[in-house]
Every structure is written in structure tokens, then in C-alpha cells.
Picture 1 (cartoon, rainbow, N blue to C red):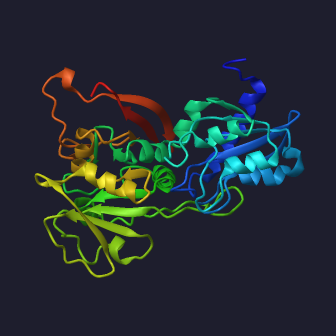
Picture 2 (picture 1 turned 180 degrees about the vertical axis):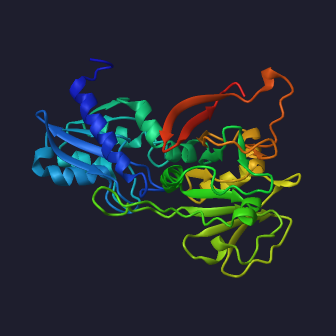
Picture 3 (picture 1 turned 120 degrees about the vertical axis):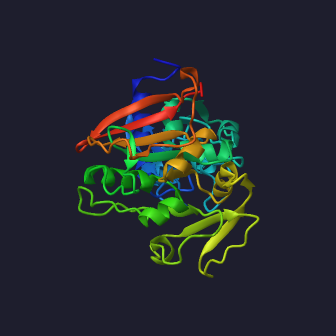
Length: 372
């Protein structure tokens, strides 16, 4: 046993995490949560949170378990809630069901919970253990945790580049550097985010839709997705009125402009002002505004200027890079701008987390290191 947990505990929590991940496209702004109820070594109930406003994982698992929940152990990937929101407290439900032991992977950082759910359980005489597979649980809900603890979303910058580090030809043409398989994979990452962020330059050059298009699953059904918000940084309100993402109506769109400028957008366009830092918008303020709107994860698909600015400001949590086996030559556009080290000790360091072939391309998942 490790940390007071045995092999069966690990197996049940692993199953709870697997269930929680089923809500990756639909639960936001709520966290992904899974629950497994076990009595006498047998699983008697399972549940996972599907959508905000619907029953939480514990309630669904307890409903499946019924009377068999009395005297059982509940494995839950996040501390049970202790407050009345759109649903009653899960800690109360566990107590009423007669559960005698609760194993939680990690505490809930939301200020209305933050240890209170665990305290309610202990006050009712329920044995509580915390920390089983904590790192996996934190990684699963990094968006929810980032929004609640840091006051800003988790930021991922997606880039597609040639083998010689170019993102477009000299004239800006970039369709398509990567394969269809890589583009489809990119849609799966879009679907996880609460917002897709881009800049005016990308909209003008590519007229992107920034929507999510997923293929049918093994059962023939297209996965349900909570449509991400499209966010365009448009400092001086120069977005063309005929831009596709303004007029297509396929997803909500938010235009962010400088607070010292009054844009002349159409009435149906939602916009909000953010202060400027020099000639650019305050990117930290942009992210803070999005967090206040319940956005926990931002997926950036932008040009080298905005991508580089986010990196330089220390606002990027991970990079998703698709490397295509093509060469675009010396006149092609660079991957990022604004990072100009003069010595090797000043170079921008990245940690490689994953390397995976996607069709003919290579997908790299990287994270800036603390040394930057």
C-alpha cells in the first residue's frame, strides 16, 4: 500500500477519472468529475458530471447504487461540493445515502467549497481520505483550477509549422501546411476550450471560422460539444464587417478593443474594452476578463505576433505544435515574433511533454519551463 491506499483504491479512482474525462467537451464552466461507489469490493454505482446545471457525479452514482450505498466507499475525483448552486450539496447527498468512507483525489479550489465539503463529511462521521491520484486529477481539471486559483484561464497556443520553422509563405499563405489528420486533431483540442482566441491579422489574412467540427464517434454519433466562445483582439476596431466569424452565427463571438477607442461595430456584435499597454492590449487584462466570464481554458490560434507576445508576457501554459514534413524556405514567416535573445542563456526554454505522429505530421506538446 502507498499513502494508505491499496491496489483496489487505485483501480477505483482510475475508473472515476476515466468517467470524469467523458465530460471534457460539455461540463464547462464546471469541473469534470467522476464518482465510483463500492461496497464489499464490488462497484454498485458510477456517475460523471455531464453538463453545468445537471446532477453532479456523486448524485448520479448514488442513484445507481440505491440502498447499496449504505456502508459503501465513494471514490470521487474532486472534493464533493458543500454549497447550494444550481444543484444541492453533494456532501449532504453522500451523508444521507449512508456512505461511510469518501476518497477524494484533490480539494476543490472554488471559494464556496475549498475544504468545506470534506469538513461536512468528517463532521457527519464519514471517514475521509484525500490525495489518491492527485496529480492526474489536477491535470484533468487544470482549466477549472487555473480560473479559480490564478484568476486567469489555462492558455494553450496552437502552432503549425514547416520543418524549417515557418508558419506561412512570404505572402501569408498558410493553407495548408499540415495534413487533414492534423487539422482534425486540432478540432479536438478546440473542443476542450471555453474560448478560441485570435488576432485581427489572422482574421484578415485567413478569414477563419474558429468553430469546432468533430467527426462521428465509433457509435456513429457526433460528440456533443459546448460551443467555445470566439475572441478576436481588435485594438482599433478595424475588423471587416464581412468577416465570416462576425456574420456566420455559428458560435458566439467577442471582440476586444482598446478602452480609449469607441469602435463602430454592428449592434449585434458583442465587444468589451481593455486597457492598452503601449500599442497593444493588456493581455493579462484580456485573460482576466475571460476568467470572469467563466472561461477556464483558452485555445490560441493566431499569428506570430500575438503568439510571441503571449509567450514573452509569460501567459502561455502549453504549446501545441504540429510539425509538417515540408520546407517553406527562408522567406517564409517565422513561428513567433518578439522573442529576441542575444545570448544562449537567454533562449526561451520549453519542456517536451509529448511527441505523437498525427498522419504524416508530428504533434508536439510543450510547456515553458520555470527558467524563462
